[in-house]
Image 1 (cartoon, rainbow, N blue to C red):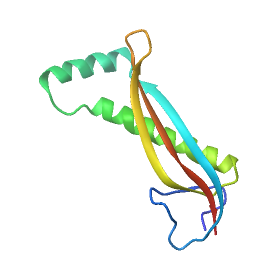
Image 2: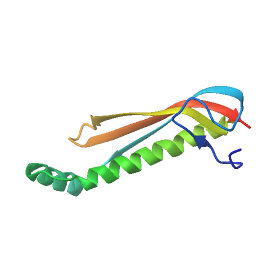
Image 3: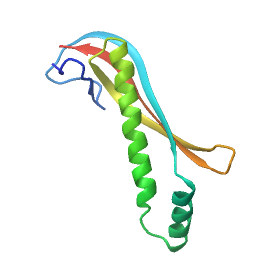
Image 4: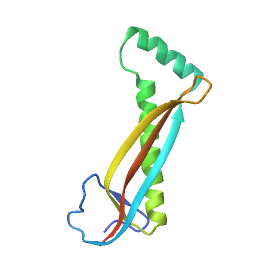
Length: 114
């Protein structure tokens, strides 16, 4: 069984080795981030010459990790100790100042397993 306070997050729809004793329902966690002016400028310069965009990769990884933390917090607040069928949804939008914002939502089904 997951440690108390921890939430097991799986992308599959069952939990091998555990028995689902209660289905709580949908849960989600969302995170939004943007790069600062310097990061956007340097990313734009790199885009001209091509190549790996490590600054954007790091930002997306941090945004994804934050979304999963929020997902676990939401599940835990409802009494779940696992989330099944976890998926990501992502998008980008303009904040109105020419600043691109990256948004990632992690979602799944909160359950209690034993």
